[in-house]
Length: 527
Image (cartoon, rainbow, N blue to C red; front, side, top):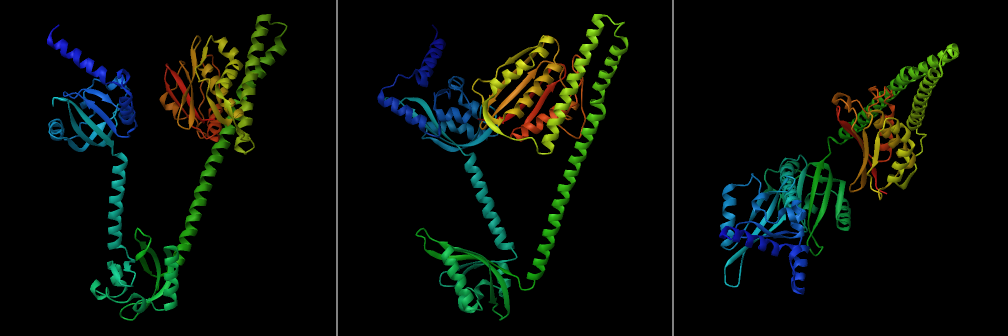
């Protein structure tokens, strides 16, 4: 065996020795492994060529890899192209010379990028030989958000302090100003802070001692006083009325060490402000009512148009068929063969089913619109419910030799109104059968999410045009198409599905490719 093969074998052996699944540790080593896996920071060990030998559970969780996907890979696969290449080039050498610490942009398995704080160190064997490198990474996403919010808050505070038209102050317990913004200097008619920082606030600023005493007692009792109306005097003797909002500043022992507050001069503008506030509130309420009325009117008109469209067109069409075919039977039954009579009877039956289905949907839709459809959620197994509906529509599917498969989890329990969900699934399966060609396939699937379950029904039928996808689930558009056997729909079924799913705190959507098939999906809360 040549040396290259030997090195490869040694590296593979080292990797196998370091993976969690091949370690045969003593009790102390097991304890160490458990400790490493309980650490929230991501830990990795690489060989001197930066190939990964070991990672802890936090590493796998942070980066989204499985253990067998990451062991043996080079650590550079985690690095983002946005990193400074000069920084990356120093990490390896710095680690060998005492360690490296800093921030990097790394990327997860799915390609998403995030900032980490990385600390590295070198591992040596008993003879002092360099054998491995250790990296400990901490996800700084939340910390960076917090730092950014803190900076924003500091900038906002400083901007507010300098530009706010109200006076902002900080005072000591003994009644002296510690800080006062420019608006405060203007309020007290002074040009500089030095003119006011030594005066006694209680004696020289507050006009009525009883007001001041009451304000201070409330502040010390609750720690905060909001919009306290009080009379003060400027240093030039002018009397003004202000609204004071103040808070007590306390040390770690809970002792009051100062006060911070805002003074708003309302002497001249108080009445105008109140009048303006009343007018604004009235206009705002009026706007809200107008917007609400406008939306309700749109929905009402759309509902009315939809209803008349269905009654005038979709309900008339099958009735016309019923009348025509029945008229043929009445007038020509003596001249028709048995096969012709059977054909007319089948068409009458098909039209009758269409009318019945449409009337049933209309009834349910009108009950929902008028709030007369009771919402009674319970916990039930949706797998069994789907099986029940498949059996109900089995003859429809068998007539087109369509295979229906239920791959929904047997443990899928949901919390919803059972009758509504039954109608939703029945409508969707009926549509899938209608638009699937002879010999096609329909599959039910489920996916467990954090707080709900996603149910999907996929077919390999005719599909839906991209322009038509936007017309589905909308009451203000009337979209109907014919099935593979010229079956006609009203478009009301999908609208009914949407209202019922949303009533059960879920969402419904569709994806489709023309001539390839369609998938309708909806969510329901877990049971």
